[in-house]
Image (cartoon, rainbow, N blue to C red; front, side, top):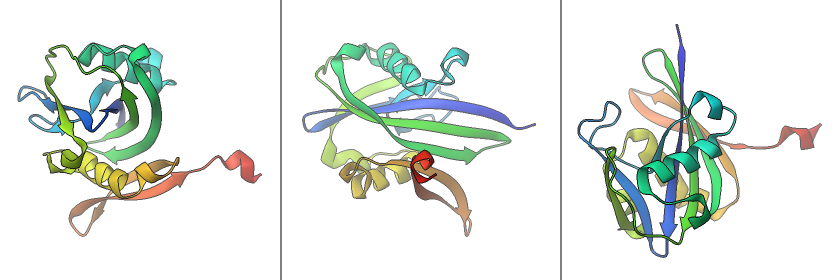
Length: 168
């Protein structure tokens, strides 16, 4: 039986830095990997990943919604993992707050944007951040990515999500 796992993750910027989470070694998913801030959607949030994203940011960092600006959905990524479809909603935004709380999820770090790609991410996040730095940060598009097996290497096929109602 195929199950669904939905998550919302944010990458928050403040001047020349971005907030990242180095996941704790005890985490079941992606231990010791770097990530944005976020987590799983609750059942009541299934139709509003943005609501889940704000909740997760506050729970993991202490940064409240009023201190977050221009938080926009930039990526929706799909992958299959052990009969589970994982759907990630990835947001990018800004914050005027740099003080964060301690979290049991791992350690929060403000890193220089120029060092964004120099961390140990999951393959999905690494490929997404490479796309963001090369393409995504230069436009207002939302991208859908499907993780595929490309000659025994995982890759992501990207497409721009467009409003098809405008085409009818």
